[in-house]
Image 1 (cartoon, rainbow, N blue to C red):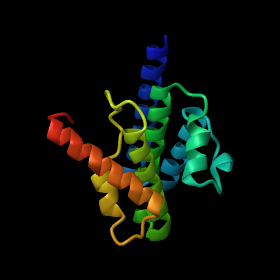
Image 2: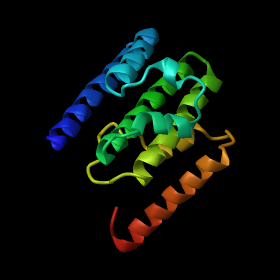
Image 3: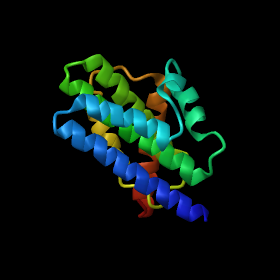
Image 4: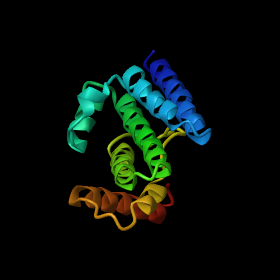
Length: 165
């Protein structure tokens, strides 16, 4: 039953994120942002009011508290994917600082989702670390994010040297 729940959650998140992408690509940024809010509420169980003013640690705790490992991982990665889309929306609007903030959250939650949770069959909406890092060029990353990047790089080198990954 738990496996069915995880698969259903992933399917719902894939559909919701696809709706955000579609609306963004059709040039309907306000509808895309509204879909992000709906997804946060319905699939991830949080309201924007609950997230306002929280740092990455508190956001992570709010999203994953009491969840089984795979559900916590998928929520982290979905939150990352949604923030990536928010970043792209704000970049299109010319709001570079807001876009950077969203890309930074996407990077932190992608790294945490990849480092702290089971690696098997990550959902297809998992953002690419290299793309997010590229979008943050010239932006001073906090030391905590730099540590996550170093850990991610170490895991990648270890997997390559052992023939895994």
